[in-house]
Length: 201
Ligand code: ITT
Image 1 (cartoon, rainbow, N blue to C red):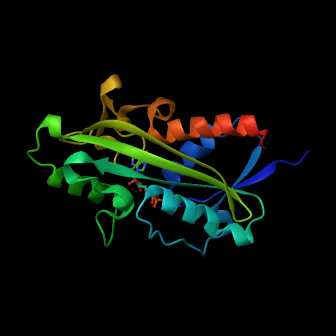
Image 2 (image 1 turned 30 degrees about the vertical axis):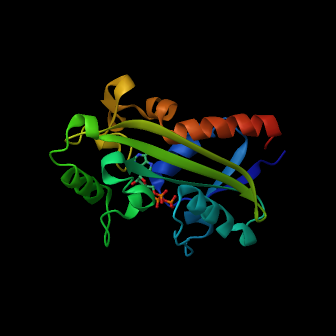
């Protein structure tokens, strides 16, 4: 029996790794954008994670018959009125890197007391096929912005996101530990439940 093909519509390697490891128990043959559409890119112009995730998922539909999974995510900091939000990946524009994004957040949060450092990561996952959205899931995880970087696992803002229940930053958690508590892990858990319920693949 041939495996169902699933296109993972992300260019973010950290994200892709987390999603692939979560879906490893399903008989999908997973394709990446780099393999299939190396020259195309979707421009994120939405004001919400859901708009961007839908856009990314549907963008490749006219050229890909099978399932497409996209995710839009980001960090929302209460003291910064929800910033960087949908701009998380590009916060240190014009040449953003994880390192520069973190620096910018720490600079903006300098001197802010602990009780005003609340933040959350949000993940919106959209599964689509042939131009139609099949499932949309939004989840989050709450924590605190640290005063300095800690840990070397994960990606993005993980080293400055402290998760109180485990008394560690997400970058101090092993990949499977992060997956068990993170915004993306929570959304993927719901996606798994949906796949089983729907009999997919
Ligand atoms: P794609 O759009 O190609 O999927 P991207 O990195 O541009 O890749 P997003 O637009 O969804 O993805 O931006 C997500 C950004 O939010 C990401 O680059 C990180 O800076 C941050 N982020 C999201 N999830 C994170 C996580 O689990 N840990 C740390 N930072 C995260």
